[in-house]
Image (tube, rainbow, N blue to C red):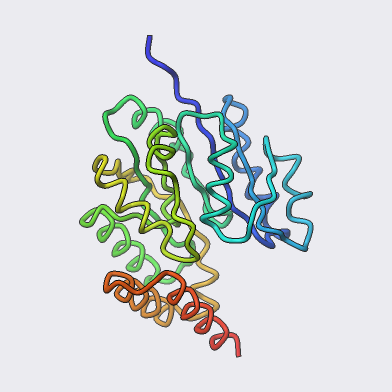
Length: 235
């Protein structure tokens, strides 16, 4: 008899007090089915960790930065599949059945399609291009709820400890193990950062940073460019 799926959902958070409980409530059906949810807080000062505690199996306090947080969650996980989920992203109701099919396949990792939550037609277009780019290149982003067999993730030593592009770097290394399992049913990611910073501004920023990354610039310099752009957008 084959081993059943045991899922560990790993959620990196930082200053998510306003939304962490409604988000975690959406994951309770997974917990009721025997799967675990691990929240890794990056040192929030707004009570995020305390608010999350009743709604997950573990709350860890890790170093600030998604790569470090997600690695800490993976180290503590008991499941045979890891699902890395941002706290502004909701899984589709069909997620578990898709993950069970993935687990019984020969694929070693995968990701979901993504849909931005806003009603603007532009957000549908952005989502379509994100999914098509991912399908053509095999590269996934954190917004797409990446999942991977635990043994494979640990075998390639997890996320690189970098401040930006950790998802792209992981995808590149996983593509050498197998092609991704691409789940068509989308996760829904909150479009607030696109709305706050401007949709076109965010598009150009992310494509510019990815281009610089592919040209060999360090994640550290790209992270500084990202932070500078965010500061400028807020000013």
